[in-house]
Image 1 (cartoon, rainbow, N blue to C red):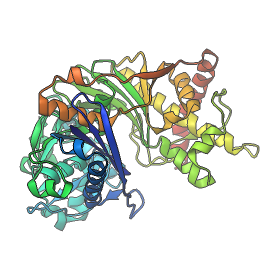
Image 2: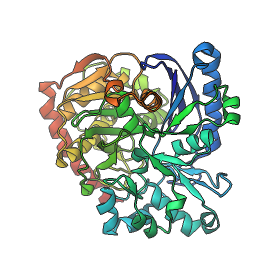
Image 3: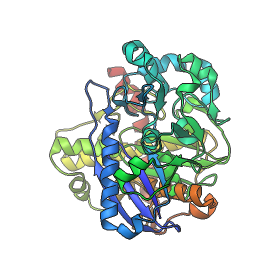
Image 4: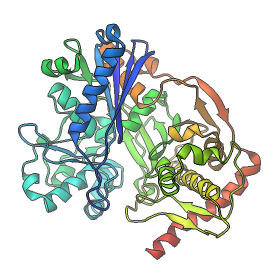
Length: 483
């Protein structure tokens, strides 16, 4: 038996699978995000470990005989977070998360140095790890002086489990310290941020074992002795493992808290100016590229809070069949935007709001705006040479048939919707554990999910949505002019 752990922004998911990757059971635990100042986003790493104790207890209670056979653990986690430890391995401050924008000026300064884009293949975004440490050096110098190790969120979990400071290539690619083509830390980039190689975790491929669970932690978790832990990976790379997006052109679109359009690539083909992320995959000798929308279903969650109506009720009120866009436009820049604008300061809004517009009109506009933002990412990916012919549709937003149909027509691509079952990051993490412990070839383990259906673009809507997208593209400049 194997366990995949997916450390999300709002909770931890644990998936118990057998050696063939079949799901035995799952467990979940939630935690919160702190926003002590505008633009700040932090989390207490103890919340992660407490959640790990909770989900392991739940799995053991529900599946005692299977839990006793666990041989390996794989970990997926939200990327870019800065978890800083002192020389005793103690956490110095709350983890600064991926959607924290406090280090925007530091990121801009690093990005102005051409060597960063040349070595990493990426813009230095404010959410990346390196500018967070530069911010610490400027604003928390006493704490910065005590930094012995910087770990990404899932790597801190692995450190807690094993006592080994390790990371994998896919997660480390989002730090702005990794030579992404060479798959190694760059001393040049570390020097440019007053950091050292010994402050970095040791690097592994996502399928490689980093150690075994410490006896005292195994006792707390109720695990058998000598359970192996593999390096794992960043959430999107591991989600790609979960849905079998492993070969060049394989990809998915995710309607999650953030939105993602991702395609696997056989080689490293960055084009940083597009604001597309070019990262190492969680398996050896593979890379992937993705565009990121910072507020996808988060935009619907915001509308839900404002209106007092649940997201599912908002979307169900529209029925299942999309209509041509109306004149109400929504820009989903509630937390700034990554692809293609690299703008942490821009903010969203409704354009063309009329006294006659209804709650349903606002809901439809929010859904359209998120889809247009994902179209931005798809177009940016295409400029790098990526050419997906179809995409797998995943994420919580795909529970809305209306939203999936709208997205297919706006992207003008067929969208494959998986059948009910396990897929995504938790399964991908378990699959990495299977490969790491058994030596299985990832190609035989990381298969594609069974499909429920394929949603094709509606020919009658493709052109109206294309016109709506052209109008949306003008919205960014208009909004910036007002801010």
